[in-house]
Image (cartoon, rainbow, N blue to C red; front, side, top):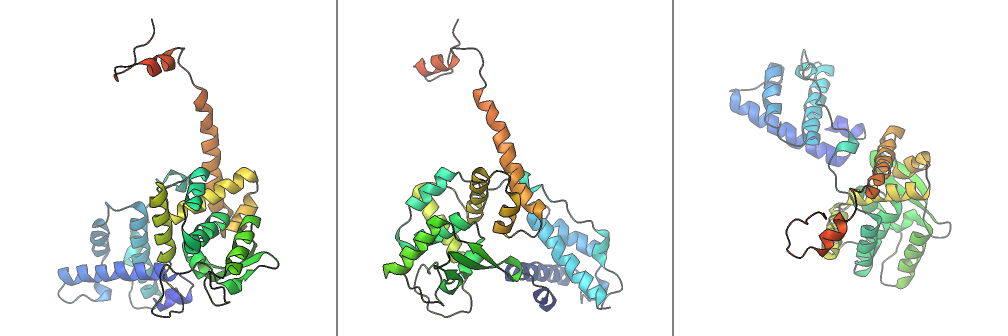
Length: 304
């Protein structure tokens, strides 16, 4: 775990690796009297992975990565003579554009913004909708990172990257109004998105579930199914609609290391636009009118 931390892996990733590797240890202790790391076989790893085959593809891939990462490190440290995971192929991930993910429309984002109550909710939804940042990034944002004079903001993003970005004009006005309202504490060390309740313990960094909880609460209030990542996707779509072809700009705004990651959003956007042509499909005439006039509640009868 220390090696992963020094390599810059996120805390959430390390926590999930610990969870799955401890389950591997539990299984080995049930099947072997005194399991030693050098005695772990390919079949031991296969048996453990088989217990997760009905889980989501992303979960299966994460578990495979955890095991492979551990035994690769042990092999490099000469703790084992062979990496038992080297003969188990990495599971294929679904194409990102084919994954069943929660999506929301621009109108639903507007409904959520309009349905917020108080500065905490409004600032949370505004930061997400106008910047498209991940929830951990939004959670870490402090007022010292916001320059209301120049209209720029410094984000501490995934992979320990620090990026400076321009603030959209509407969000600039919202942040200035919040800072001047007297209702939001805007000292340099304060979070831009306040906690939902008074914190009793001072931590170096708070849990980013405050962002998740706020989004879910507002979404349920206005009758929308939404997640933080759904708002991130909506931001990407809205940007591409306003700036067609500006894929490199979107890559920088989304903090993607590789352009092909950003290309996923463009592919999904273009595919959605291409399918819009089906809306003018018609089968003859009179069917719609007859369906509207139908009074029985059963299938409409085609006109003679």
